[in-house]
Length: 249
Ligand code: 13P
Image 1 (tube, rainbow, N blue to C red):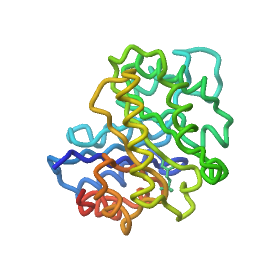
Image 2: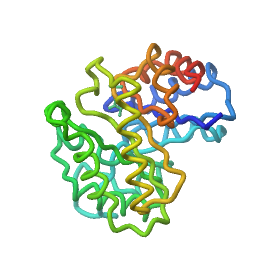
Image 3: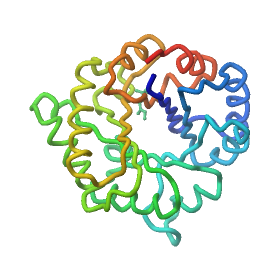
């Protein structure tokens, strides 16, 4: 069975004390499975509490939701890769749809953030995905390819970068891509990664967008999907534990 990855993006939810309570409940409800890993992306203020609470579990890892591309300096409100690392993060999301569409992050900035993440010894999880208008115009693969090229083009192929395909129209809408639609885009991403050789294999590609307890198993039955990146359905520790336990793959 291929290893599966379950990533929880808490977005702007769950403070430090809540993170400890959440993870105590989660670890009680979810014992280690050798064929799956669980990643948590708390808000920056909760990274340290989360990392400390699960320090004994090697199958669970913590990451930042975003970092700045500079290592330090006068950037009020931002955190650097190094600061996230010091707080206990091993990973970071980059270019999440909400960073791109709510905060106006550009393709060029995602590239700088990938470089900054690797410099800070954080594994990047690069998020890509098209809007509804782009999908309806048949531009899904060109858009995703442009995002990959901007963030990864010109790299030497030594670093491991996880990709999360999250169609913008599926995030928080209750409308998810069908397993077949998701698999089609994953195939195009994998083909691009193989052909361009700008990141190191294995090429791990997650799907995100309204994944929940009801649809996760069906999505993961598609072999193109190496895991899921989940927002809303990851906020309840017992529900999330159940999803991770039961989504067969
Ligand atoms: P939802 O699962 O709430 O749709 O969010 C998906 C997402 O953005 C994960 O990064």
